[in-house]
Length: 250
Image (cartoon, rainbow, N blue to C red; front, side, top):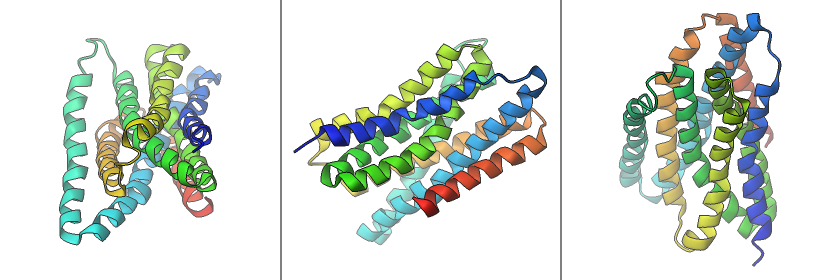
């Protein structure tokens, strides 16, 4: 069967994160930088928690509970909290990347890792759905693009304002985006006949735990440091609106 189309859909969906990273090329006045960072961080917070609560967790629970109610519930809880506790461990490790690493750089790296894990099963899902029905795959790919763009912002903005390097911000975002076509390729080469909806659901619950933990423990405290309450509210509202558009119109 034709694999170019499904692979192309997965690649475009994944690399759409780079569109979000282009925000670092905006020229922000010095007096507005804190407001801009606050909006971007709170926007990322809304996106990451929103995707987890309205998409990853409900869809995964539906699959696992349908297969076996009691077993599915136990597996769901274990998967989610494995994500929570693994990222707590990772946070302590990432903090030691450099002695002089500031909180924004650490936050950008954590977001990159979390979104790589998020994009990998998305790439599998996009590829397999496109492989079976290209129209379904394209529809899924568009929905993924919509939330990958703000995810790119969540990586690029902290990295850029920590390093002052546009190249570094783009590179880290690109690495995250490549996880999606990588997932697609592995799906075809290794797992095409073995991946189940239950397997993908377990991975997505783990990712939901990671994203919620990062949002609460890292993004939210970092956002509050700038003391730009109006900007925080604007970013949250913008994120919520995008989540609603993604769910009700796609």
